[in-house]
Amino acid sequence: MPDVAFIGSEIFLYQKLFQELKVSYQFISPEILGSPFLPRFKVALIPTGFANPLYSRALPALQRIRSNISQFVKEGGILTIFGAMVPTHDFDWLPLPLEYVCELSTQSVAPSCHECSSLLSTSTPECDGFFIPGERFETVLKDHKGRAILVAASLGEGLIVATSVHEFPAGEYIKWAVHRAKPSKL
Image 1: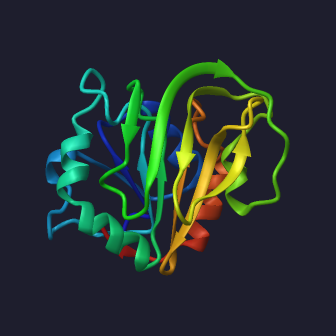
Image 2: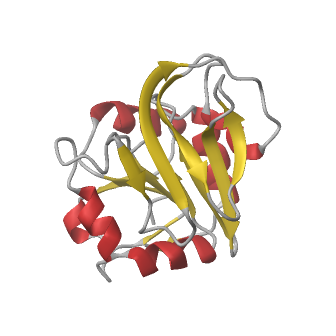
């Protein structure tokens, strides 16, 4: 059973990151999301640009498997989502309300003691936007205008983490997520 499901095309730099961390992983083509033949995963990563058809074919698949996503998190999976890279995005495929607005910028963020703040490897990340968190989402990190750039919400035994940080997740975060999560069907 792989620890991490990466939703999208195989990307060498992610492959290298997972190998360096000694984390098992599988790149999942959006077309096969929801297949009963996929193994259980602890963490699902949805990379930057998932909603932009110029970069990815993931959005229609995510919308199609909305109930699977909800169940994945409720059973203990950690869903990590990066920026949509479209002007605005309503996460209608998530079980909790969340909105995204694209706005490229470099930010200076204050440290947070929240467990998922380890996602950042720098205090001056490049960001591709901000979030308008809905019910049950907690703002973990804010930009200099006070807008959410990292949010988290517990659901069942799992967690939804969304970030507009336009950088690779820190190795510490991947290790933390794999350790905390439970294997769940996506």
